Picture 1: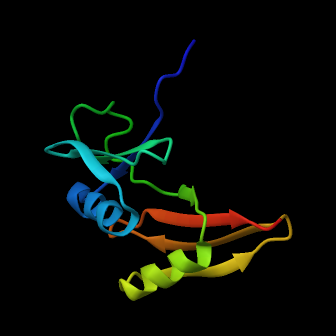
Picture 2 (picture 1 turned 180 degrees about the horizontal axis):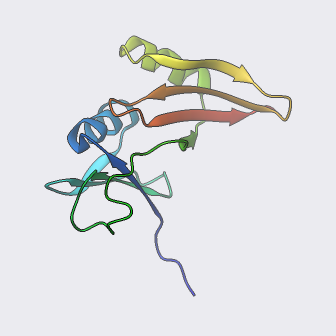
Length: 125
């Protein structure tokens, strides 16, 4: 098997709201969109983020009504403090303050309008 691309698909109530959040605050571009669907990419991200509207008939019946929960969309960045200051200046609520874990991870979190957790992280070292 050869993997040619990677995506994470997240079921949300309001696809345009989550899409706008990643475009406006994280520099993603919407590369495909339709009713109830948006695929976003960044050349440097290594993964596409796909938002699907809950209840879509194209989803298997046992997944249609699921909502993204318990998952963190994490991006490693070069300037964690700079990104924190930028997001605060843009009015994005920081839902987990900058923390440092004993294993060297430094991270903070925000949530998009649908509750999707976005974590920015770097590593001490």
